[in-house]
Length: 505
Image (cartoon, rainbow, N blue to C red; front, side, top):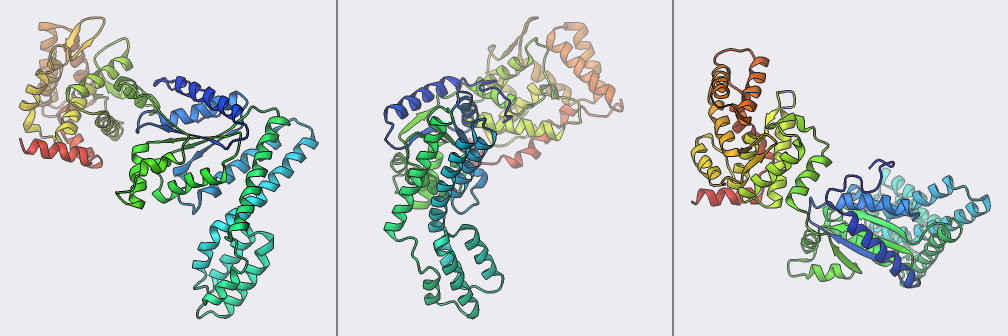
């Protein structure tokens, strides 16, 4: 998101209300429970309900109110071994930036640098505790570049107290290239950093130093408390990584004046956890251990979701032709909303239908604008039935006639039913472009009307941009083909199930 973007610009799903409630809740609880641990809130919503928008804008909001804050895109770096590294890197980057950009006196800057260094030292010890197990496994067969790589890891991450000892173990291992024995491994990890008492001491020192550093932001830098850490896309991560992230938040960062807001599709995340621990595992109860609260974003209306998808995609709606209206975007959203509901599609299927619509449009971007009413109706037939065949027009026509008189465009000029428009488009799609133009012109002269004029202008524009040969077909004739090519990216369980149901009728 652009750093100069104002919080809650284009808040189509009304998420600012949710953010304000959570902000006041977290701020008050942090103040009242000043000596308790961190606050961890799970913001739960399904895909397409605006979680990322919520996270990005609440982050900007708390920054504008003077709070220290960072954002973590968990999925972006789920290839790293331990999410602790990523979180610490973001925290370190933020603290360093505060010192660099502040106008506070040098004495306060130096005080902050010392506090950051203390956190870094303890963080290094905890990080070494995390990677030593992997180092031990990796060092069972160490030859050539492998030794150099381990030395580099030691230089970068090992605490001063064990660095020379670990290097000596590797030097000894290099002399025994044939096989590194368990005895050498033991010497390499001679100082057991996972010894419980030492790990516990490092953890307590880390928490204490981080707590002091955050307090310093409030007392010496005049920032508001608490500090916010926003975590997004956790449900898209590898299950083991998602679990590790939650474990680190729970055990390493459980300090006062620190608030985590974690956005998830909790149902999806629960399924991911079951993939690790087994189907019988109570994943929802397990997640409850990490979250002090789960706040469910209210489901947005289908109309607002459609509008949000179009707006967030920054799509040029002029790439679609649509009957004349003073409020084109509003009318398009209403049409997609009504049509998807009449076809009995779920919110998820509506999102799939729009993705398919976008893909077809992008694939034909250099062509004349696609006629939205006809194309989207065919897409809905495909999504709801699982297949699309030009020979099945009769059954589709019967279906849309049953939608009734409410399936219409309300324009300033007249109320027009979509059935007559789509039926006429299908008729023209089976004609040569010149014949279609002549028939459309006759229709305008005989009946006039909004839809007749709209179709005539559209066909004339396409005809004039083509070769004007008698046999050339309109682009409308290829819409079935467009869908049947693009659909290959959208075959999932719901569409396959729709196809099976349709085949069994």
